[in-house]
Length: 500
Image (cartoon, rainbow, N blue to C red; front, side, top):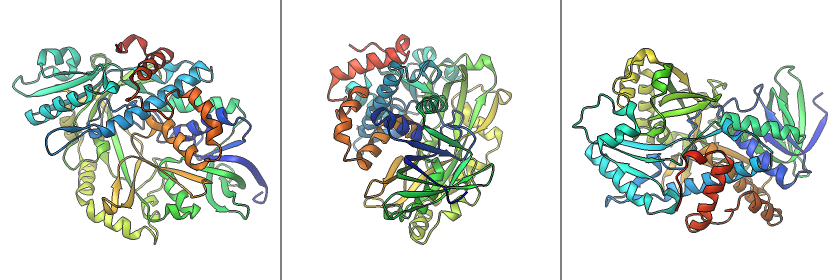
């Protein structure tokens, strides 16, 4: 069985939102290319893309305070927020194209309009939020944002959070109605249903065990059928590794020099989910707070309205934690087996630099339910323990690498694509904003890996994504048109801010 050669044009590893997005883009641009997808689990979107494994925030940098930083003079740097917002707009345009072309239906099954809010406590933080608000509202991308430190106004916006609060506490919030809640699990499954209808070969319960270059420059993959134990050989000219936390091991097996000296640090998370419908009904927003000192950026506390299976839910978290697994379904040996001679020094340097983070994560793991409730009560003062259960979120593997500004063993927060010099293989590593910026990230993969095709593809890409190659911030008229059209197509129109 192992000797049978299965040839295809493109192999996608991992049936998550990234592979789904790349496969869909390729099927639009070069429908004749053959694509095969390998997924270790029995269905699509069941690891990091699953709706219970991520925050479901359409990351447009409207509420996440870790995308805006305070400069020494007190002014606020919003350059990262601009970048993330522009990237999310690309996703919105592509999703709209898919709905308009009837390639996916019922957008309300994966995206819903929902106000995005930031909330802070304490005089210094209120001052920061005010400065952030002023910097952002001067930018056309963030039109429609409101700021208030008036308890009466805040009571209208977030009654559940404001009830039973002591009135002498300085508190402020910003609110923007054009935010979204995105069910990335549902979106992933929709995209794979579409790909299946386009004759993409979806092989679930198939685990990629190894890979190597052939004499003609193709990649040969050794693939194990998890159910039967049979080994198959599959060859392709281009391979994309989109296996979430599992991508690092596969990148290492590829042996490409670009994958050397790169490590990964796993961070797990726990959300609290409200089981009392009366409480769920009292909150309608995503409200992001400020991360505690020493906490990693993905542990910013937030109280989120979510729409899962068309049902409204309320989640709080995430509480960070530590597990040596790189995937929820991974092995406890994932971290140790990812340490290789070429990344050992980088990993040791990261360990020495991040002792406080490690300590923080261990403390988080040890928290009792009551201690977690105390953190929730900073958001909902009268929260009751019986109303809340736990759900374990997905594993995130943060990239560790040597950088010019950070030195050896720098922990990277973000999403990163690593590709071979000849563009024959690319791997996606890292975490947030991840899924929200999937379309931008996959267009980046196409540009880097298929430079010889990008000019001929450009007209079609522009048809799908009108802002392709342009800055929306610098083209307010186009921004206005895109906001209006995507909101209408994706069914977000009722609660969208009208742009004047």
